[in-house]
Image (tube, rainbow, N blue to C red; front, side, top):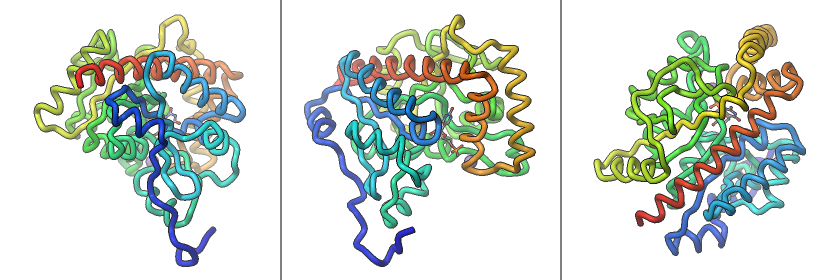
Length: 312
Ligand code: PSU
Ligand code: MN
C-alpha cells in the first residue's frame, strides 16, 4: 500500500465533461454505483452490466454518471475504460463514505457503495440515482452492530434513490424500522408491498406508493419544499414472473447464512460473500434475477431523472 506521506494526494473529485455539461444545462442525469460492479457481480458480466446500464439510461433520455474511485480520485461519470478497470483490476476496494478520504489519500481504486455514490452524486448536483439492492441492517445486528452506512448517509443526502428494496440476507424488518427512525421516506413503485430484491414481495408492507415518475419527482420536490435532507427511496419490485422461485430463495438463504456463519465472515465482506453464495447455489439463477432487477431500476431511475429535470 502507498505511504500517504510519499506523494501529494490526487484531486479528490472529478466530474466528467459530459456530466458537467448536462448538469449546467439542466438535462437529466442518473447516478449509478460501482460496488455492484467491483464486488457484487462476477467479471466479465460486470463489465457488460455496467456498460449496458449506461445504454439503458441514454435510451430513456438521461445522461449516465457511473461513480467510482480511480487512483484516489472519485470520478462522477466514469469512462467505459474506467468502468472496465474497476470490474477487472485486483485491489479494488469497497468504498463507503468513511473510506473516501482514505482512498484519496492513498491513491486507491474503489467501487463506491450506495452511501458513497449518493454522497458524491449529491455534491456534484445529481438528484436521482439507481442501484440494485440497498444496504441495511444485518441479521444479528443487535449483537454485531452491523448496519450499513447506507442508512445514516441516506438520512442526510437529499437524493431520490431507486432500488428493489434490500436483499433477504439482511434483516428487512429492522431495516424498515431504521429508515423510519432516520426520517427516510420509502414508497413502493406501483405497490404497497415492500420488494425483497430477488422476490417481488418481502412480506412487509409500505404505507405509500407512487405510480409514475412524475409522482416520484413531485415527492422529491415536496421533500425539498419542507427543507428536509433525507433521501426519498423508491422501491421498485421485480416483475413476479421474473422473480427467483420463492422456495429456492428460502432454501438458499438458509444455506448462505449458515455458510457465512461457518466461515466466520463479518463486516464489509459479508454482503459480497452472501451474494456470491447465492449465485453459485442457484446455478446462476439468482444472477439473472439480479441483472433483471438492476436493469428495471436503472430504467425507472432514468425516467424519474427526466421527470425531475422537467420540473426544473
Ligand atoms: N446489496 C446488494 N448488492 C450490492 C450491495 C448491496 O444486493 O452489491 C452493495 C451496495 O453497494 C451497498 C453495499 O451500498 O453493498 C452495502 O454494503 P455494507 O452493508 O457493507 O454497507
Ligand atoms: Mn456493514
